[in-house]
Length: 58
Image (cartoon, rainbow, N blue to C red):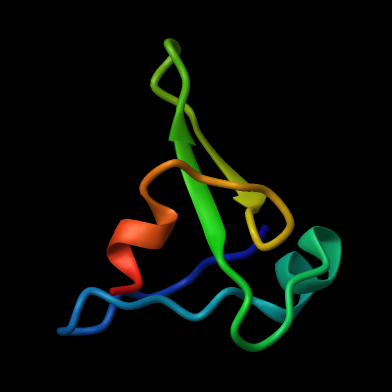
């Protein structure tokens, strides 16, 4: 089991095992998707295009 603590700024640090499983590196983006079951899925989004991505970077 891996647990991440939420900071007062709303930030989390992904545990090293999860970073390895997702193959994320410093600066990569992760996507949080809520499924119909209420489960949250975390995806390495650094290699996919997200429609609002370019708007948020400006």
